[in-house]
Image (tube, rainbow, N blue to C red; front, side):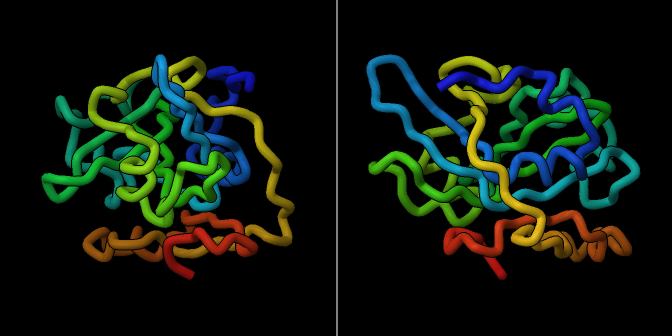
Amino acid sequence: MTPLPLSFSARSPKQLARALLGTLVVHAPRNQRPRIGRIVETEAYLGPHDLACHTSKGRTKRTEPMFGPHGHAYVYLVYGMHFCLNVVTGKGAAVLLRALEPVSKHLADCDGPAKLTKALGVTLAHNTLPLNRAPLFLAEGTKVPTKYVTVTTRIGVDYAKEWAQAPLRFYDSRSEWVSRR
């Protein structure tokens, strides 16, 4: 499986959120079977002006990776116990991976952002890694036709005022692995 080049992520968060649907996420630690999932749900976070985005509170040690180069991982801890994986687009913006459809047999329970990181084995150790080489990378999958892409508001961002209603969540309507319809 050939990793996608970092240039794949060199686009706006909204464009990348759509383009990631159907793409594969591969976690292939040394001496272990690769864990592979097909991205079926994403959310775009547009940068410091987006009140739902972590960088809206400013540049911090936690959010520093979002200001780094596109195509790198931004992994953070939520509720003090779960990890979430994002693809950085730069300038304080990123795309959250919300759900995966298992491709490898031993990957299961991926219908939510914390569930997918647990299934893949992604931790804070993966934060800031480029997503174009092992152990964690994006690979070409099967593009989701436009007629099967559903666009809705993001989940769990009610605090973000008008940004809570922004249509920045994308999912493959054919997939049973989407976190919420």
